[in-house]
Length: 50
Image: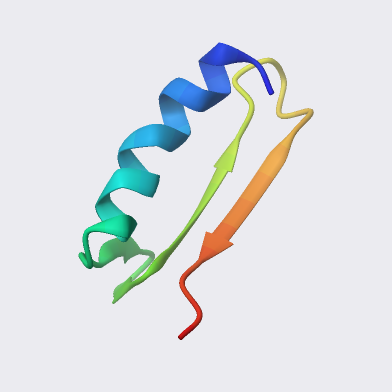
């Protein structure tokens, strides 16, 4: 994983690790989607499953 993608992911990962929900479309959820800034070659979907 490139450092540019990690720079995008880190705030989301940190937020989820601390129990906060994120804006996910029109709802609040404990998940996010992100794409590599280099043309979207790498796509990431993460969600908290309890």
